[in-house]
Length: 80
Image (cartoon, rainbow, N blue to C red; front, side, top):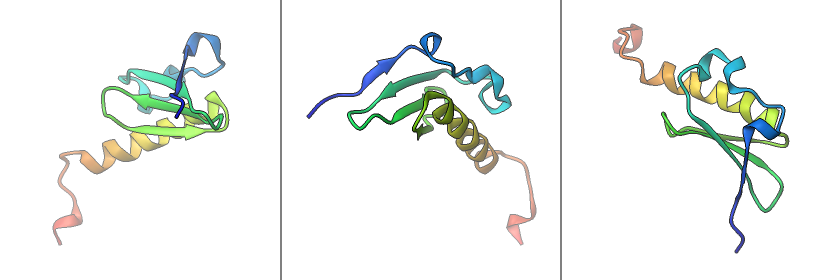
């Protein structure tokens, strides 16, 4: 079984700071044995993947935004 290879974000065209949802994120990236890029947010524990580093980061931004929305302490109509 092979392990995932770390990817330096400085070496790829994927900038997490371009996404509002990742403003406070600590993003690390790796590439698995199938060639997929996996982006992990060390702060929330959320991960996502994509065929390219850019797509992995974009998918992560969407996943983190959904996570933050779901875990927000804001009262809403869900008590009805």
